[in-house]
Length: 233
Image 1 (spheres, rainbow, N blue to C red):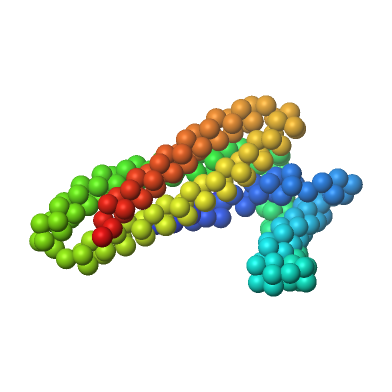
Image 2 (cartoon, one colour; image 1 turned 180 degrees about the vertical axis):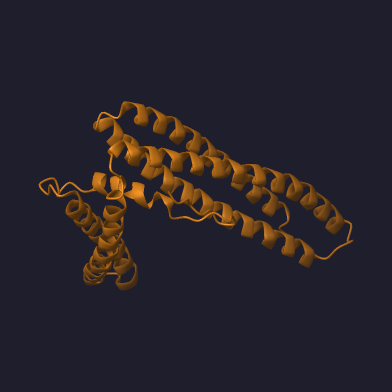
């Protein structure tokens, strides 16, 4: 099983592709009569991509065109693009799923990946806490030096720009973790519905741990925002 990639980390983000099939299948209800798993997965990917693409395209069309015609045009374009990308995702998922002889093996691989995601989230949070402690102290010293006219405002601006870059990186990592959480929730729900109670319970615990890491990362980003505000002149 591959692994994900956090911004600012050297970890690859491709591992949850095999678990994405559940997220796709739970969002589509029009494929229940297709019995071949590979065909159903591809179809579900296409329909999901079309639906999401149409919704996003409609919003963009409305924003750009500002009228019904712009909205409909955006929806049509979005549906076309979404269908293609959705089909490719569905095909990849179907191909990966076919590598597993047993459903339990596939679920165990998803559990291993969930544990990896949580561990990397914790590692990222530990690193972030250390950086925040250093930045908090440095920002106070810089602000004091500025008030005493020992440094220019350009130095404050430079430090603030660096902090804002870390904020953006953290926001992106939070987005990635939330996406991973949604996929894990989909897998856990499928495991429960299929009678795989052991795997479902393990996934529920991992999801709780991951959610805690997400909340901690969100709190860290608030602290970064406060430090950045301190340096404003």
